[in-house]
Image 1 (cartoon, rainbow, N blue to C red):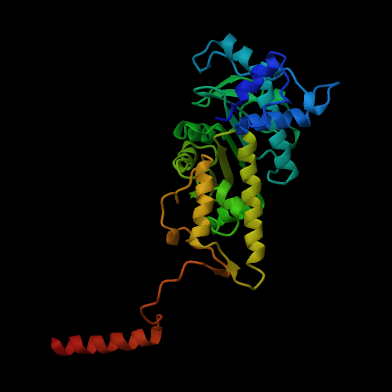
Image 2 (cartoon, rainbow, N blue to C red):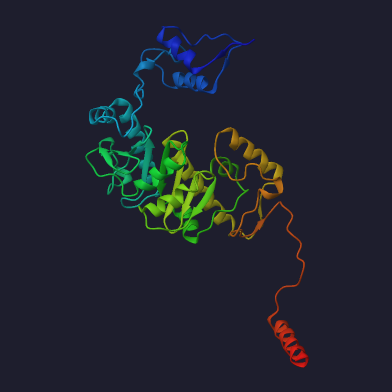
Length: 352
């Protein structure tokens, strides 16, 4: 039997001072182990060649050994909030905020993000701060009722939506909300983008539409949270988009890039004057199998192939690969309807 090497095995080798560059030729590496070796090659320790790099694993910020909750002591929460691990998460939020701002997915002080860091606590962005100028010291720590536990700036006014999503969807580790123009245009129209056109969108996004309520209100948060069981990308009518990830904040951000690029592409494609091709049922089934293997949600899991590419209301020029239903009668004719009604009235009058 071939030797299977996990991330834990490699980290133990590093701690023991062993080289990880000369593994047995028939070894099978787990995905996380391969990523670890790739990181060693890309970021060798100073003074060492890439194939002999052995950085100190213990230098990577680690989460607290004791899980924290909103009931933890003030001292424990403050210690965690100022720890290297929490700082690394704050830096990730800042990086995603800067990307959102550079891509014009946010304006003014719009947009907000959160990362779950305990059973019922999360780190989030502050209110009234541009995502283009976020700094780690701007971040806030809140409990799942929205009470601020740590941080000098006031937490975002829309935090209740993020927290309600995390409470409803236990898998949700990180959430991201912003206003990318093309995707928000669909949100203003209250229409989910058509499906079965681009594989990246189909694999990474599952899009639902939540009706409008006042931003930051409990009603808005509940309507969004109710969709998280089946959707990881939610259009908020007349407002914007919010995404969640069961992995990290960067993946939640990626969904913003993907849905915005997709919405922009199909709007442009609809202006070309040519029918838009869609996937066949079997092709779409293959993509959904990949999606399910990655642990993503989608309401189409288990549906028949012929049902997978129903793109609903918005289909400019789309030629669906699923055969259309046959029409059973003629279209509506107002003049003919008047004649029929007149004859019907005469017959009823004679019967009386």
